[in-house]
Image (cartoon, rainbow, N blue to C red; front, side):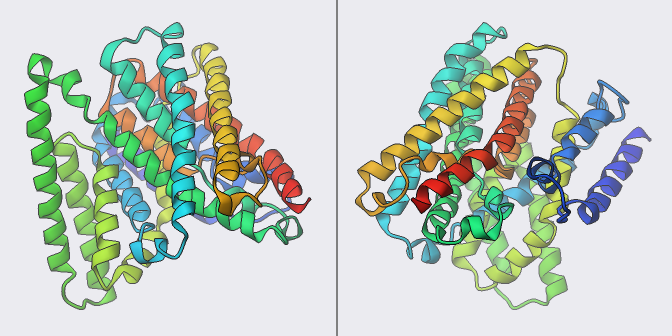
Length: 399
């Protein structure tokens, strides 16, 4: 009974929050940043979690896992649709190479820092340490450009080339982040299968490939004929549920599986625009639910989480600043851009939340919730720091 009660609360809060948040009000910039990104739902989930009201306890969250898999699958489809090859070809290859390089240059310091520093705070060893470092580094690689929308129009005017470049890099960063996060699942067999993990890894890889290809063929068969808007909506919802459930059964990521599906559908079907409109129409409630579930698992019991979050934030900032500086000096097409391009890449965005939530579901170790809580606090730090550094970047671009 408690599961149904929690589900009802979650749905009511998501759709009521959709109509109340993401609205423009006359607020200070830091308050607008907090309000317009839906961050308050992290703390609302924390309030309903085990540390306070205990409505979202461990057993209830386990009963709501099908909904969690659907959320991750829907987000994966949305991000997969962003990578339409025809549109990506409009940009110069140097831009793509620069964006990938920037993502890798962010990944390296964060991965090394988390791998070597995390054992100083919690007891973590072996493959668990590698998986955790991969997940934290992939979340750190993500970049959002939503902060630009919160700036005054006159501060953006005249720097459109820099703004467009940041938007392009943020899109490619999500691809790099998901590919890095995929590596974590190669170690999953070694964590759960015991001595025969090499054999289990091979079997799991074959099963995953066969399942993805089969589901893709089934999806394309459904979309091979012209369908009405209602039929197409039913197909999209049904297949997202089916694909996410299949990924959960074979112990793979609903986020990554649906990302692959979204990429293939965007490049193989005629109805990609209609499907994308269906997906994006409920993006905000999905995002709110994601924040809500993550907030329900946040941990506040130790001060080391705040200190570790500050260190994680510093490592990510170092990677972004270094990556932005190197690509502006190494790529001839970007030499006219400000050297401190990384100042505009601090905000992490919704994909970081999705990666952390997927990591939490796929690797439910004792240390996972504490590490995810650390990363969530770091995302909040970046959200507050991003407007200041972004303004500095645009001023430098004006000079």
